[in-house]
Image (cartoon, rainbow, N blue to C red; front, top):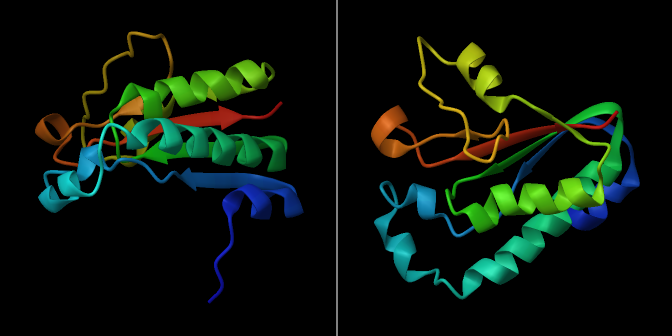
Length: 144
């Protein structure tokens, strides 16, 4: 198996669907992996956020018309979620954000409480204490 950098790999084609499972602080997985708190520090956030922006930007550039990118982190930190997406959308104003909450509701079993985001985005934010999952953020962006 070979490894490739997603920032480079994305540029080799046009894709209808891309999942960016972004490297992040992992703050949302501390319940399952408490030892992770010793591997990350607040000083890691700026570098990780920059990498996340680069990965998401590369994915957006690689989308075919009508293509969809899912940007997912296991962090609830706004610098790794809403801010990254806002920065990429500012650089690509033609992107349309879909309501990820509706997609999560459609694929989940039963009702799932996913309130509106204060920033007005369609981001789905899952929480351990509410949803029994890691604290995950899911954003769906579509290229026109």
